[in-house]
Length: 115
Image (tube, rainbow, N blue to C red; front, side, top):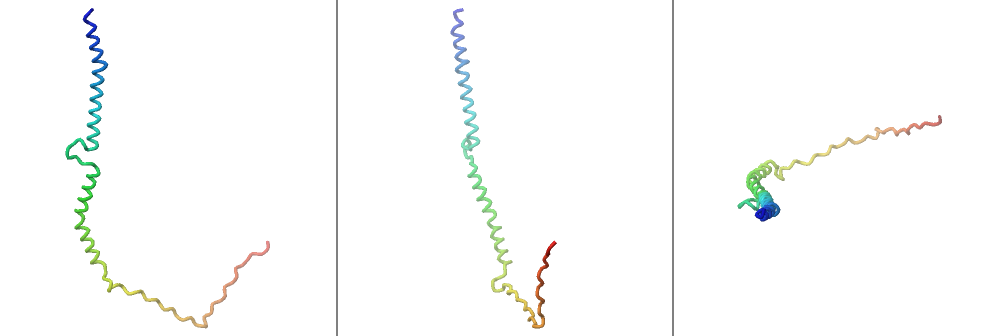
């Protein structure tokens, strides 16, 4: 039939060119959207992980600052002043050795001789 030629050519172009092109563009668009969502660039006002960590660190430091000051005050109260420091320990005096107390000389160790 004479009219079937253009129809088959048009179907072949759609099947082999247009359809794969639409698929590839769609896949690239989805991958780009996922990448932007993962990095945080896609959403306006989004935070990166380093920015979020910095904000958390600042908030924790600000919240614990009064507690740290209170801990330092309590440690200063508990620490004795330098002038009231504990006296140095006294040494015990040993009794003088009498001349009568003479120690016996040490014995030589026994040795085994012969069999």
